[in-house]
Amino acid sequence: MKKVSVNIMYDSEKLSAIKLYMSQRDMDIKDELEKSVDALYSKYVPANVREFIDMKSTTTKQSKTKTEKSDSEENNSGGEL
Image (cartoon, rainbow, N blue to C red; front, side, top):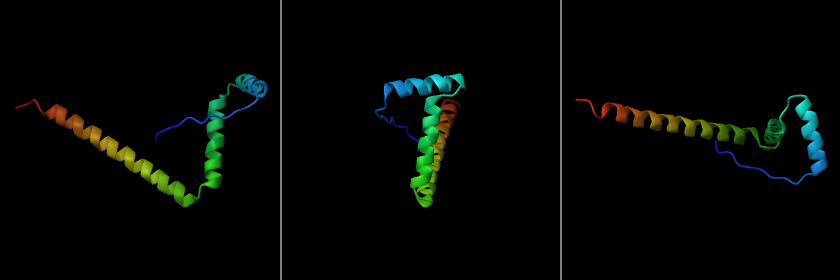
């Protein structure tokens, strides 16, 4: 699934404090923010919509894999007689 960037405005001193105390626990703010956004997604997006998006994502991954395999097979079998 394609990823996009999300930008928010936040107090710089508070952000510095978060990073400082998270680093003491070997935690990464990006990972924690992703978990928070995933929680919002689960909370507000209806289950049937999430299932549809997951299904669509899986189908896209499978078609890309099949295309890559087909291209690889054509390249490997093309030169032999």
